[in-house]
Amino acid sequence: MFKKIVVGSILVSSITGLSSTYASAASIDHTPKKVTAFAAQSDIILEEEETFRGDGKFYFDYYGSEDGEIRVFVENTGSNPFEFKIVKPGGGTIASGYTVKPGKSVTLTLDVSHYKTGTYYIRCQNDDGAKIKAFAKVRAL
Image 1: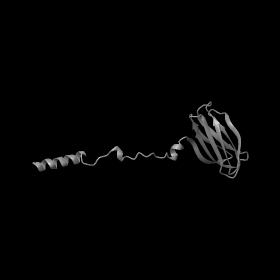
Image 2 (image 1 turned 90 degrees about the horizontal axis):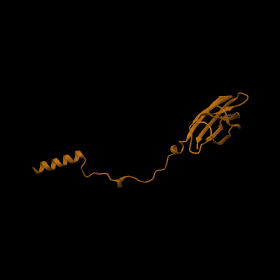
Image 3 (image 1 turned 180 degrees about the vertical axis):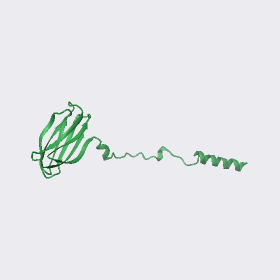
Image 4 (image 1 turned 135 degrees about the vertical axis):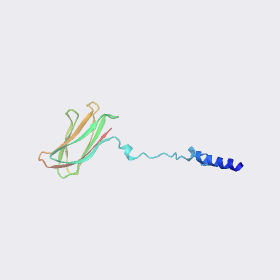
C-alpha cells in the first residue's frame, strides 16, 4: 500500500509540475538593456538614393511630430551638381535655392508645424538635363 501511495504521488507531482524545480523572480536578469539603434531611428520618414535624368523627386509623408520640425539631408552622390527645393502638401515651396555639388551635402531643419500634414517632396533638378544621383534622408523632430 505504501508503495502505491509513494509511486502515485511521484507520478502526480511529475505530471503537474510539483517537483522540486521552480522558478522565482530572483532568477530573472534585471540588468538594464541598451536601447537599440533601430528605436533611436524610428523617426526617420525617408531614407533613399535615386538617380534622375535632369529632374526627379523624393516623396515622404509627414503627419506631425513632437517639435513640429523636420530635418532634411540631401547629398550629391553623383558627378553633376544639382539644385533642390522642398514642397509642402498641396504645392508651395518651403525651401529652395540650394545647390549641391558632387560629394557635398546640405542639411536643413525646418519648422513645418503650421503647414498641412501629408505628402511632401524634395525636387532635385539641373538645367542641362545631366544625370543626378542623390541621397535624401528626412527625420521628424
